[in-house]
Length: 383
Length: 176
Image 1 (cartoon, rainbow over the protein chains, first blue to last red):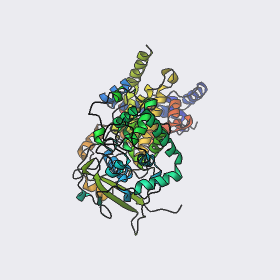
Image 2 (image 1 turned 45 degrees about the vertical axis):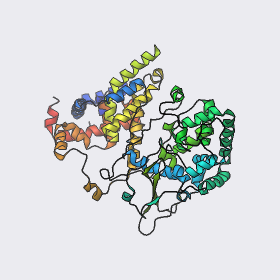
Image 3 (image 1 turned 60 degrees about the horizontal axis):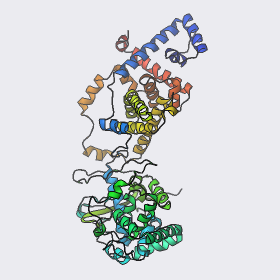
Image 4 (image 1 turned 180 degrees about the horizontal axis):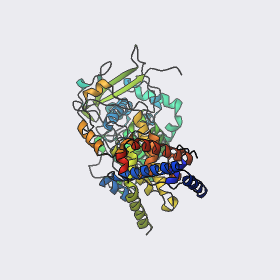
């Protein structure tokens, strides 16, 4: 009797995967065919050998800290290596863009021509800073007014939580077109750009923000204090801010935009009992995001990054803000925020498939650091 | 009380599946450290599940979550800009020196070496079947392949192994 060695039933038989009827049928064939018996024997030997060798593989366990994290049910402190690049590169570049967009953007409007950039929540906040009336009497001295905001720009604290600068001297920044170093002067232009765009595109958001401002005005000193505590700059405060309880939230949120981010308004280090006392945000879980360390380009000259990125963080931030809540800082991946926007870069010319645009400026919060924005533009293809 | 029993459940799941999952994730993601992160995340997600909800299909759940996470990692990796050969030559390799790789190969069993030559989909089902002791049905739930397809892949892989091992009776003799 001719058997078909390619029929999966032989292996299924050896592995005990056949139903009663199928099994009985195979056993009948085995009785009548020596060829079938030989086949099944060989399959059995192969499976035994396979099992043995696989079992001999040394066990690979989790690291003790990973196990501990699981057993404590805690979110781990983990460095994201998912992208296969040192994360500082991405965050560095991203933070640089963020800086240009949001922090430095207030000072360096020439970096910002994108229509979409004005639609961001950050833009809404930037507008709000200038739209707010002077702060209530309860605000700490030095918290300033709108004029001070625009003239002095973000304080040294701005962006310290969410952004990083790339630790290279400006001379080392080489890219197509060279690096422009701008110690940007304050200007109203960008704020006006934001304002007009916002009016057209996202008036409702402004409205929400204004309402919050009024609410804050009523709450006065408490709100001011919260704002000062949460004070991390116009937008990065939102990025890094801890989630406050509902009532405090709206007050702090408005106050944060209104209270001018000056170092003098910050409480001394460690004097943040209310922050500690807040219950942890636990209705949504986010991986903890850690700042990446500076790296010397001499030792780490090469970086790669994905050109296809998520934009989920922007929607997430918007959702939180629309709920009058600050997003937890780990909910915001800076690159996902920045890459939400469309940038109006010129297309590459000639044979080059991409164009690279860079600009650098002193980091507002640490003038001896340089903040670099790197934009990559590929040629548009007719779809 | 409930908390204590859930802890025991997690600990039991860890000790039973931790190593298998790390191996499995390593196989998909290609890197043991990433695999550990994937498996850690898998178990963290398990912590949020109710034990009774996963009754009777814990391994399927664990392997499925682990597999999805690992494929996410691999998919994102694929989007990375690869080094050009010229660039690559300028940087030292992080891989073990050639001799070390050879020694590792030598130490690896005959069957595993043959296994490495099989297509990925066959290797995956072989691994789930013979290392993780899962049934065709469980493998089918994890890989989203039909049970018939799983049986076919396993059989085809076993046939390839068998044929290659038959030409090398040394390996087969060890089983007798």
